[in-house]
Image (cartoon, rainbow, N blue to C red; front, side, top):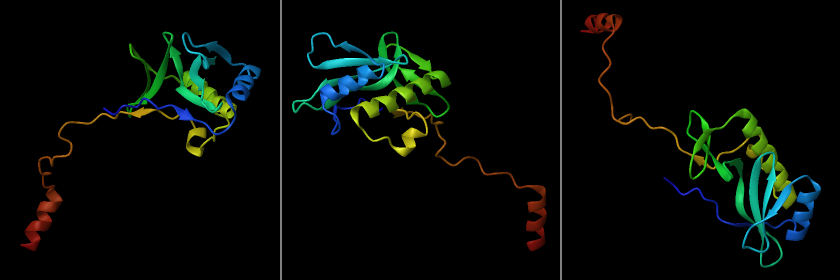
Length: 159
């Protein structure tokens, strides 16, 4: 299984102070991270993310957006048949309401940091991980298909 933990991402848009002001002015709850100066957790729509001040005064994304489940930022995972919110302790089926909240949060988050809104992401919520089921042995050829009666008649006529 691939490690889907995003690495910190330096933004080229607003500086840290401008981004924090935009977030506060647009209804985000900001909570200073314990034991770390220049790092805040953002909360809105029962979703969260974290940003920190980069060395050059810009913004670095520390934790990408996810829904809050049990006080933890859950990551969206797609298993082919269903999307789930996964934390270190649990996995919860993604409902339309939670997906909509995460989508709205992420779009506003990008606007705050002056990040581009990509077409495929604007259509809906994009999972951080894709873990599709695989049927064991699907790749190996199966038993030959039985000959159908009309195929048998055609084979006899040709012979």
